[in-house]
Amino acid sequence: IKKTSMATRGWSRVIVEKPFGRDLASCEELLGLLSEQFDESQMFRIDHYLGKEMVSNLIVLRFGNLWFERLWNRNDVQCVMITFKESFGCDGRGGYFDQFGIIRDVVQNHLLQVLTLLAMEPPIKADGPEAGEKIRDAKVAVLKSIPPITLDECLLGQYEGYADDPTIENKDTNTPTFVCMRAFVHTPRWAGVPFIFKAGKALNERRAEVRIQFRDAPAADFMFDTRCPRNELVLRIQPSESIYIKTNVKSPGFQSDPIQGELEVNYDKRFYESASESNPDAYTRLILDVLRGRSAAFVRDDELKRAWEIFTPLLHQIERDNVRPHIYKRGSRGPTAADAFINARSGYIRNSDYTYYDHKPSRKSKPKKKAGVSEIGVWGMAVMGQNFALNMASKGLMVCVGNRSPSKVQRVIHRAKKEGIHTLTGSSDAADFIKRLSKPRKVVILVMAGKPVDETIAKLSEHMEAGDVIIGGGNEWYTNSIRRSMSLASRGILFMGMGMSGGEEGARNGPSLMPGGPKEAYDLVSDILISCAAEVNGSPCVSYIGPIGSGNYVKMVHNGIEYGDMQLIAEIYDIMKHVLCMSN
Image (cartoon, rainbow, N blue to C red):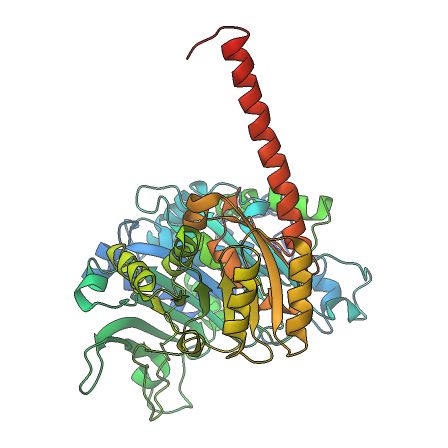
């Protein structure tokens, strides 16, 4: 190219398409080869995501509107989610994809570029001859503020049948086709705000978007005596480019509950009169920028190297340690653990009552539900039961509490309101308690071991049906759990015995959970348990232990070790005091 295609007069520009290497070393090698022949000002490394309408819109949206820039900081933003979903897999190109994977193919370039535009400080110029370098300087500053992402901040997935592609040689491949991961931008503007990447293939839909969830409106829950949904700014990159803000308004008619609608700009409908008109294709826009010499939407060499520095250690560890991805079904939302992983690391609270208005005659959103919608129930309102119910409700889950004493139920509901929690309801009547739960019903029983558990199961199961789940959450002899499971199985009700460690404080702030029972039952409750469990090094302290009885057995062993340690410590203190004559 250098010898045969460069102009002797005027200008010559070279467009370079990705992949720009597969790690830092290969990237530096490629940059070295190109820099020997071409000046940096001649090279336009193209990332077509930077040519998409909503991505190129970010600078105007942020810096051309007074209110957005004032909200764009750690004081008002709860989390930022950048999502890329494809409904098709890698069929026919798996041989290529298997050499790279979803992190290299999508996250390290497309989604990271979007993050830099979201998080950068205002450039001195946003348009004109100087804008290219000023914008890229601001983006590089963001990248330098992001430390390398570690494995404990990631959840990897691979869709069923991925390795069946005949172009994939390694049938035991661990190449991820799905990933969700958390990053932080360590600047005064963004310190402590989680940025979540989510990308995957063979999922339930084709969609790419940026979703910024803002913090709770101050005192709104108290003022309206209900959970007031959080505002969100959503930039839909594809399909059907649009920008909308989820905004709380009064429910129509005689109700006064807050309900969410949208303040929206839909590009296809707002700016074009007919379907034959549309935004220019990303590559069309970018190639025109090359001809004009506009470099803002292209990746500079230092920007590229820093991006690889963030991801290379993680990529090498996945390959070196043969980290196995979670398997998920084609057409699903991804691995079953993904939602709980994201919610636990982002603090994101989903408004399950919200429905996006797609400009068809329909109600945009539903008012808050009064009954029959609690996601999980907790029966038994001693301190452990109270605290575990409040723990789950504080994570945004709809929880129904139950106890034979109405005063205890009311006491927990009052305590929840004092703590600003409005997702908790309750009943002292077994039939009404079960009626308040969404199907399949899920109930955690936290009463005294032995006969009280059997009596509670008999009372609640009378109103339950096949497919519902009961979890015995107290300390229990494991053979009792086996007996209860066998008895309930005849009616199709699933039973699990679950050890819970951490005491009363752990139940409220995050226990270690040891569930054992039918895998089908665990899959139904895993997201809930993960969201409320303790975390160590970013990983939730809960996992499927095994068949029925195993959770209780592991908890018994745990207790034996714990009580043995306590006895040992007591004896050591006794020796120190009475033999060595030591004092406090």
